[in-house]
Image (tube, rainbow, N blue to C red; front, side):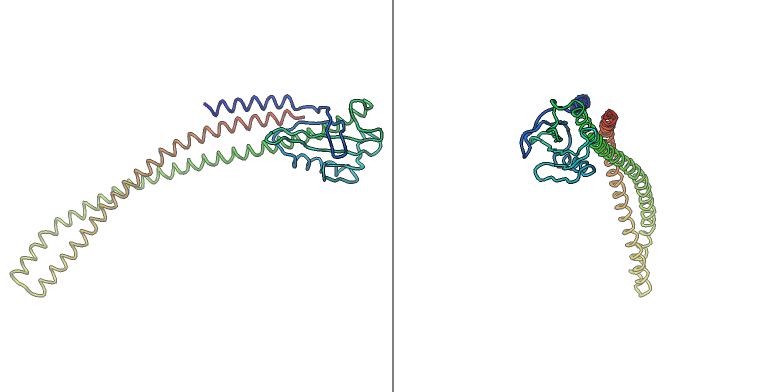
Length: 289
């Protein structure tokens, strides 16, 4: 019940996140060279290093030089939708300690100054479009990674369930084999007991013969009978031990099967929850465009 409730809460938060995180926002941020207007985007499920790494790679494709000492800087960047001249792009990812949310602040410097709400409308819209496109691409990348991870976890859970099912089949086969061996051991007990019962009067008769006619031949005959009796007794004891061992093994395997069935039930519940998560993440990815 608690897991289902948590999953419902997670799905609600996921839906809220999908609805809320679609467009850039306008703000300002204190970079190493001062406070500048920014076009920002809020992310979840990532970190500063990853986001700044993404922007660094993006800026390398369009800039003459990229540095990342205090913030990511793309110098001599070509952004036709913003300016016919090259521009400077500053990017800084901000994440409070312990928070899953992260804000990527992007500032763009043209010959006319820092792009913001007071800039030429076409320039401002072009800058917003530039940041929006990259942020959407990053969101899709993160969502795809999240989905891939969840799908891999689902595959592992299904493999675990298949393994449990195979274990159960092997245990069931082991029980049948143990029962068969126990039955064979019981038959061996009956055979050896019958042979022992038949041998007792022969041993007693030979003892009597040795008493009345003690000689080397009678002594050898008695010795042979006693050896035969000892071997039969050993076989009988072994058959008893084998039967007990096979019955215990069957009981142990039966206990394993009961536990296996419980494990399969729990694993099936995990799979159902993971399938719900994967479906939600697929919806999340499909909603990013």
